[in-house]
Image (cartoon, rainbow, N blue to C red; front, side, top):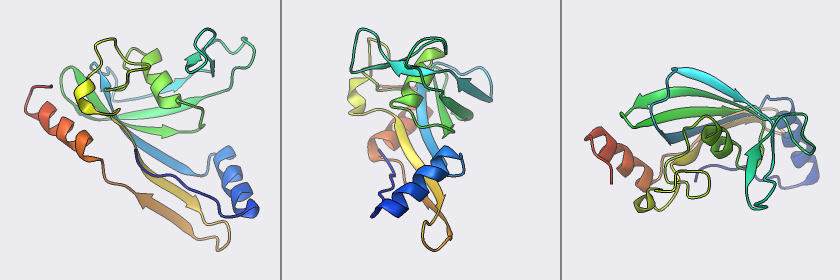
Length: 169
């Protein structure tokens, strides 16, 4: 859930793509992951490629593997709930399923993720606890620095409230 940007013409698209490639666009996500993340801040700097046997999934592979692409996710702990942790994730790159794949690769899959998460996925969430919360970039025409913020969806805030009460569904 959350924010996305759509270019209305080719020049805007090229400008936005260049900002993302240069890592000057800000893309901040909030996620609840399974388990207690040990460090308050960290990075996952692992190449990603299409899964070798399940073409609908992505996976982490060594950089020496063919077709891998560099992927970098930084994270910071926002709140701890015992068996879950709320993170702010910042993307330097934007690979398909990047946060989901990276978090699963460090044994902290996104809560409610039936693809990369645990087999006993929390289906009552009706979605993953991963939200594109903040988006910042320079307007392609005016040069103005823009920053947008999106509220967490109801299922996400309800799950946080449940975790704060010390139980999960």
